[in-house]
Amino acid sequence: MVVEIDSKSGFCFGVQNAVEIAEAALLNGEKVFSLGPIVHNDKEVERLSTLGLVSINHEQFNKLRNSKVLIRAHGEPPETYTIAEKNNITIIEATCPIVKKLQSRIMDSWLRVRENKGQVVIFGKAGHAEVVGLLGQINNEGILVSSPADIDKIELTRPVYLFSQTTMGVKEYEIFKDSLLSKMAEAGVTDPENNLIVKKTICGQVSNREPHLKIFAASHDTIIFVSGRESSNGKMLFSVCKNVNPDSHFVSSPEEIDHSWFNGKKSVGICGATSTPKWLIENIRDIISNI
Image (cartoon, rainbow, N blue to C red):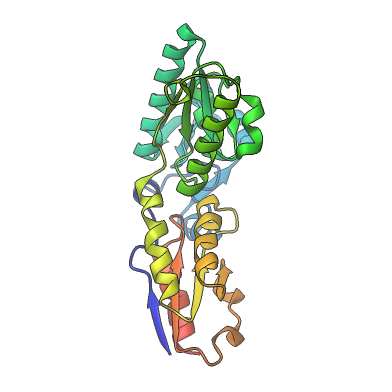
């Protein structure tokens, strides 16, 4: 049985950058806190915790004093930095540069569109850490949408500036945009394409993996997709594999592997999310190779 790892799977730049920043800070031997799990992968969180990284929630952060806190790749709203300054907390900045740029773009648009009664709309998942940070840049005055069912939240006759969370699916974003244009036309907007300004803000490292994974998933009898259960990106990319190859299985740890999946199979492809460490993918590859 041939077992192949997808060459493009593993950490994206933003997550890799955050992990390296955390490791460098921990090498100094100081206690470092991470505001939220540094990555949506339990195994990687466990590995870093053995090095001394302690995950805390916002309630714990608010009570913290005179400490070092890492801001993970998802980013944070301005309020977090205000609290840090007040509580003498040293921030270790590990926000993904792409997310940081998106935060700035959303704030700039919000400041401009208020003059023409425009609306900033963010296509993303409610409660997701990145979305919380994005909305925080504009005083939570943006409109969060997750599907065409949310279009009713938008005033169709007013200008709309549409952004996406960086890890959303390209196809879903396109469907939402087309649905919004149709609704605008139905509402009597004579030039809906000028009334809707769409910003391409899905991360290229995420969007480029979709077409590649379709080819990879189709080229193997069985697909093992490795990801944390909480990873938004993982859920999206696994669905890409599953749609192409129904014999695709989602695992978050080696213990979840079922030997019966490989009965009579000639090839197995192993891939993962942008938040899945390469060492975990390789570990699972070695286990399957020995079956």
